[in-house]
Image (cartoon, rainbow, N blue to C red; front, top):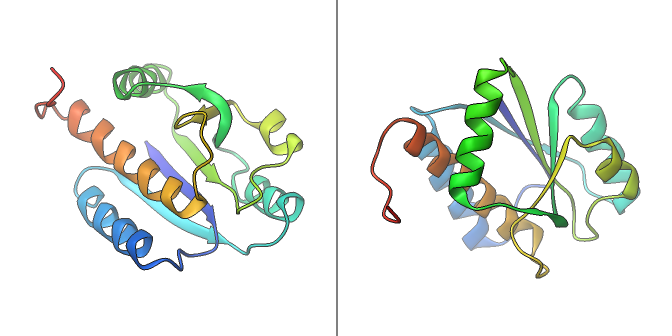
Length: 146
């Protein structure tokens, strides 16, 4: 399965940039995951860029107003995608202002990492970590929560 992670602007915070690089390296042998950045701007402009870049993909918007899922639920969703021959999924992280109503409406899933507001660069690191964790579990590696 091809995984595309779309985010507004490259991380400018040092901890986020290091976290992104760490999980990109960890994912190399596990998943066909591509990270692509779109130019920043206001919510409406960034959302339009994210929608254009995700055409032809199952779209997952990362947004605090979305569905909160455990890691195991995310693994089960991934298995469902595999069973249904989903070939391309795109995760979208907006800029500081978040996503537009139009982007959320056009998404196949709106996924939350909790109801609290999270800095978008941190959300990118959390997303990459969860994609990594899903792939380790799908590969049969042990999970510390079991």
